[in-house]
Length: 154
Image: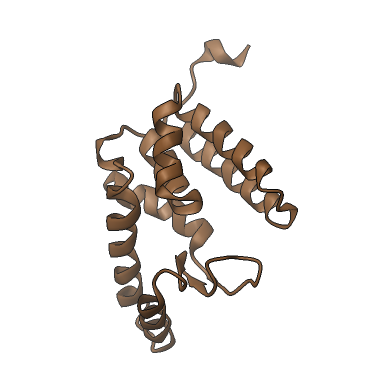
């Protein structure tokens, strides 16, 4: 499994379902693909899933993720786990913000703290616990594959 596939597996863990929360600006969302930005693709994905073609639906979602998030955020040129952290940020907080966090960060954990700070600044307590849980899971996933050295454990 390549890094894109590993990173996408993590993202889909958090973005994999169907949602149509009126508080979410993206509107109807499936596999994390927002209908506001991809109305035709969301209709296609939903129809494929309803028709029993989950693999075909996922194929459409993967193409969007690779082109609009992975490649757009430059994740191909990043090492693990920075590519995971930046990719997840691009999906959840936007490509421009992900690139800004990446370019101003000291390391991948710094990106996580920048994300938390941004989430808090949004003043949306209804989503905050979920966002923080996602960051905790992201940290656990990243450090498992790239353990922090003992010198940082105090």
